[in-house]
Length: 153
Image (cartoon, rainbow, N blue to C red; front, side, top):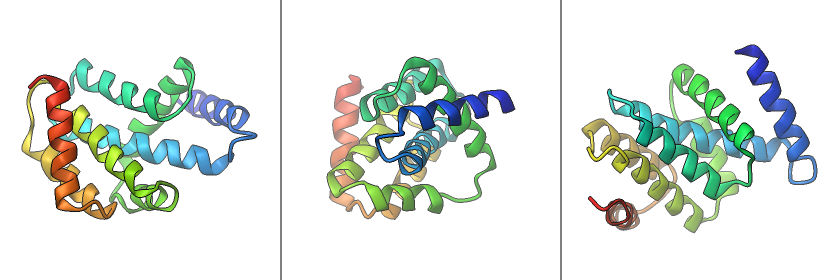
């Protein structure tokens, strides 16, 4: 596990050397942790949810498959040890513009809908994070509907 974390930091450092470095890694990790939190909010984690997390990260960041796998592993580890969302949402608030924050909420909904069942814990978590990202209720609902319509549910 420690080797994987060291490899992740090394590869992300190399990949981000000319692209913002540590700030980019922090943003990637914060995004990944929040998506993993949605996945973990449902007691039954499925491959569909895991794939939705990877797909969202792939759309948001230009990372290779091995970087995505290590980022997901690190995010899962960080998620298990997190006591709140502030450090993750503050990283997004510092670097994302408002439309990117709305898109983040939509990514979270996509993860929640990926398994075909919306769990109450997922809704609660996304609502909480949306508030911390200063996404209005109307924007939150629009993101939810867009994600739901895209999932075919």
